Image 1: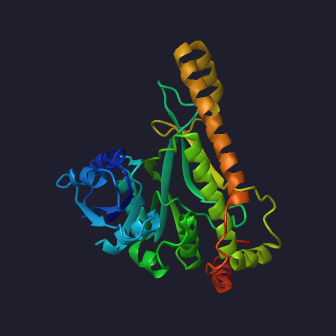
Image 2 (image 1 turned 90 degrees about the vertical axis):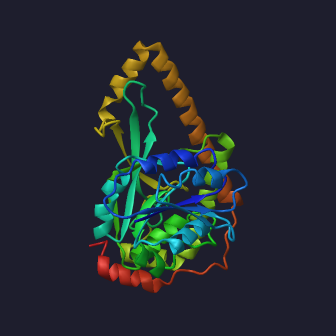
Image 3 (image 1 turned 180 degrees about the vertical axis):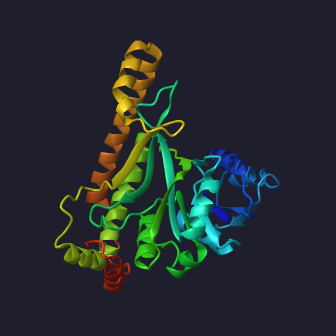
Length: 331
């Protein structure tokens, strides 16, 4: 197993991820590859401090900037037949690899689970939203996984052409779709969990979702022939196409994994009884509102200002034919 982490100016966060990986207990040989993408801070020094405490290698991936290029460089350098990708600003849970490895051994493409603190979380009993696969509204039959928490057989990864380094965003959607269209089905592993960090600032979130919207539009160009084949097989476009946001599969659980969506009224009552909890809750609601506003603004800007590279190659319709004939998603 090779765990690949693209890293660019990740001095402040990389240590947390490496510490989390150091708590993995594996009965097989494995390695962690830091794909150093030309950082100007102390990212490489932070990584070197973990040599000896982890089966760690640091590779120079500075010849081509961007997370896709860094991930591809790490995959090329990997020594194992199984590849797992995670990010330098997240943290895997202690049993992440223990849960992932048995599933990945039997399935070529696996999406793990991202855990994000919910607005309804309390200090006494934290609550998290769990996100696994996502879907684009214009091609809902093909789910995708974020590159921050998926794993793949190296043979499948290289066979479909790795990450497309020319895409600035949505490269993980593109790879997920090419894998499935190429005959490598997506499997979820909800027990393998990472703690996902959100963008902190309003402006950073706007830029992030502006990029997401631009990537969405680029995908619609690149997959226009495939989308047309799915629309024809479906009998028309999807009935509910939303503007930019993907359909997110979310479940709420507490810190020990117990589903808890029905407990929200009880939590609100608890906030009202406890002034400290109420204050924390109000802060989270305000922050959540700011994030939603930033997302909406970013999507709107991406829709009106984002540019599409119309010279980018289009995925051939023949891949859709083969997938539709084999999988028969419409019965």
